[in-house]
Image (cartoon, rainbow, N blue to C red; front, side, top):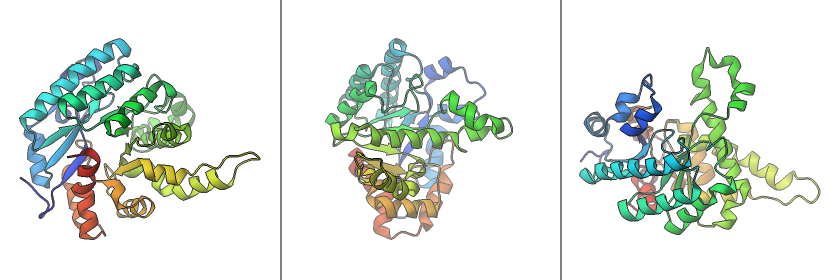
Length: 320
């Protein structure tokens, strides 16, 4: 088994594409399509070359959540079952997050429970808006209720921002710089807002043991925690009830390094949240494995904290 020195490496935001979803999407122009569709040959060779022992697999956007309630339920079941069959062939190299049919929150909760109890999945990943609605909306709270009961996290992953937001904020530059709609800025805007809204929604009061994961070093929120917290606790109108934003965020959120191999971003996240809240991820195949593990070799952290990032925190959070 490949290791980084003598430290096992677990990467927890690593994507794939199910053949049925691929057919429904009809996205033949996706430059990552072939690599996303690969579940063993290229993937394992590149894991070995970069020193990654285990990938926690998750379906790339949109997963099962973009196909409506009725179709999405059947699709999620089939996609998750196929992923589980693959993981069983190489359980020492792979684990998984479920895809959920989020238009039907009750069915999503049931599918999450089935995947955790039957297949040993480690939680679920949701992608951006569902029917143009943020995940904090109370219609989706059955998912969070079940996640808390199962003691598994929900990974909130980016997807394209609301079309109105794109039209107002981004369209002027989208033709010349199309990635501004995605990882260049749009994904961060959409997912950081989702994280912030979850704190504001009161979902963590209702489900005090709920755990959320954000990728890409927390979508910028760790950098902004002091200012958001100061605003939420000190700058309200008469009758304003202070909200301990940082306390809630640091208690319920974990962040990963996916697609953000920055010493400054990592140190900021560690300083604001603590090393126990940061997990290693690459974001394969959108980001190559080798730069991620090479970066971890030289990050300005002690050995104990590096072990936490590379495997310890994942083992604890995902019960691996």
